[in-house]
Structure formats: C-alpha cells, structure tokens
Amino acid sequence: MAKGYRKRRAGPIDHLDLRFFASLYWPGFAHGNSPRQAGNIRMKNYGNKGGSMRAMSGASLALIAMLTLGTIVSSACSQVGVVQARRAFKQANMEYQAQNYPRAAELYEEALQSDPNLVEAYFYLGNSYDNQWKPSRRGEPENDALMDKAVENYQTAAEKLATATDEVQQTLGKRSLEYLQAAYGADKLNDPAKAEPIVQRMIQLEPGEPSNYFVLAKIYEDAGAYPESEEMLINAREVKPNDPAVYMTLAGFYNRQGEFEKTIEALEERAKVEPNNPEAFQTIAAYYWDETRGDAALNDEQKRDYLQKGLEAVDHALQIRADYVEALTFKGLLLRLQANLEKDPARQQALIKEAVGLSDRANDLRKQKTAGTSD
Image 1 (cartoon, rainbow, N blue to C red):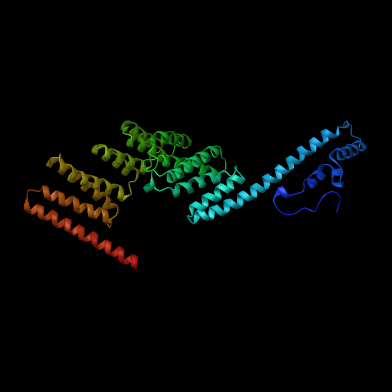
Image 2: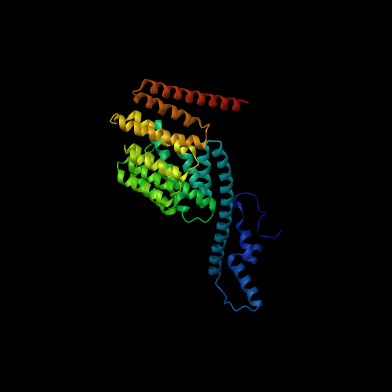
C-alpha cells in the first residue's frame, strides 16, 4: 500500500479519506507530500511532456486542490443521496399501497431530503397528508396542518411537473392540479377563489377535456354564478359535442335551475349522440315521469302531454332492448299516472292492468338475472 493514505472503509461518503481523491488529481499527494510539493511534481511532469504552462505557486495549487476535492466529494455525496432517495421512495410506495399514510409520508419526506429532484414524490407526499386529514376534526390545528401540507406538496408537484416530457410525470402533474383544486373544494378547505385559477390552468393544459369545464361550472354554480356556470357547460359541449356526459351534465344543471324544457332538450341531444343506447331514451321517460308527479303547477292537459312524450321515449328504449328492466318499470309508472287522469273507469282499469303486467314482467326478469348470477 502506498505511503500516505489509509485503507478506505466502506460507509457514508464523509468517512472516506480525502487523500484518496486528491491522489487521483495530484499524484505526489499520495506519497505523503504536501499540496505545495504535490503541485510541483505535477507541474514538473507536465513540463517534461512538452507543456508550456507556467509554474504556479504552492498556495494556488493548494487552493485548486481543495476546490477539486470539494467538487469530487459533492458529486459523490449527490450520487449517494440519489441512491438513498430511491430506496426511501420505494419503501414509501409500499407503505402508500398498504394505506399506511403516516409512515408513507415520513419516507417520502426522507426521500426528498436526500434528493429534492425526485419530483414524483411531491404528489404522493401531498396525497399521504391528504388521506390523513379527517373532515370530522376540521378546526383542530394538528388535523388542519395535514391539509396545509397536502396543498403545499400538490402545489410543488404541479409546478415542478409543469414542463415534464415523460408521460408518467405528465399524468402526475395533471393529478396534482386535480387534487389541489379538490383540496380547495366545499368538503375540505372550501375556498373557491383559490380553486378557480387552478381549474382554469387545467383547462389551458387540456382545452379539449370537458371534465375540467364541469369542475369550473360546479364552482360557479356553488357560488351562485349561474350564467358563468352555464357558459362553462356550453363551452364543454363545443369542445366535445359527441360526448354524452356533456349533455347529461347540462341536463342536471338545468334541472337544478328548474328549467324543465332545457333539461329535456339536453337529454334529447344526448339520445341523438347515442341512438342505440336504450338508457338514453329511458332517462328521458324518467324525467317526464318525475316532472309530471312533482310539479303541482301543471294542469291536466300539460300532464297528459308529458306522460305521452314519456311513453314514446320509453317505447323507443324497449324497441332497442325488449328486456330492459328499467324501461319496463318506468313504463308501468307512467301508465299509472296516466290512469289517475283518466275519466273513463274502463280505460282507467285497462291502464292499471297493463302497468301491473309490466311490473310483473320486470320482477320476473330481475329474478332470472339473480338466479343466473347465483348459478
């Protein structure tokens, strides 16, 4: 073993003998020479090879040696940190999957301390805190601090992943924004003013994704900004006019606003998009049934009109699928309401009899389905 340095021991980087690293750049240093002597040896060797570098002072060489050592040690420490971070991240993921969120949070914190560039960990750290938060303990400092940490890490993840090119990281970036806006939702922090710009950012990132418009529309609706809410839903329809969910969401909004005609228009547009889906037509029938029995302001003529339109819709559903239990059930319900408006006793009994037959048919189909499932 060369004189001047000890045998290296395995372990953390701060236990390594710095002479070993110095010898890589300053051969004379490995033989017990001072930095000044080591530098002169290197300059001499350089000159023998035809170099033209001027001799440097011992003090300058010593300074360069220390700077070089610092770079080497820093690089080695960085690599060790990356390894430690990956190990902690892997363990954290196992705890996360086991829903041991307190321990997962500790390990994600440890991973990020070792390697702050492990950007994926910020999302999972935020979600680990989020899952520990309890709505029943809202207002308790320790519990509220968990949501604050969740928001902080969701925000960090969203910022760091904003320019990601990796597909997995891009997905986590979007998830970070989604969970961040959810944290500001009514059932958590209840801060729509902070949620709004986040969802607007989500729309900018994915202008063709209607679900983001739905979220912003709900924020506006909850705040009482109904025109703005409707505008967002109309924008969603424009970016994806063939998406049935767009029309169902519009129908739900109009129904909550008490605008029945617009509700039906949206449901009929949905049926045009899905002409072979019996559920689309059965849903129209269900809305007609609910409006007829629930709106006391309707006169008998209006009720008959709604019931007839409901029956037409449900018959269309049964043409597509004759054994559609829900359609059979709602047709029976519509016929019973129709019987209530009937003045002719014979006609009334005929309608009730037909309704009972449909109900029996629906029950038989349910039993057959249950028996088939149990077999």
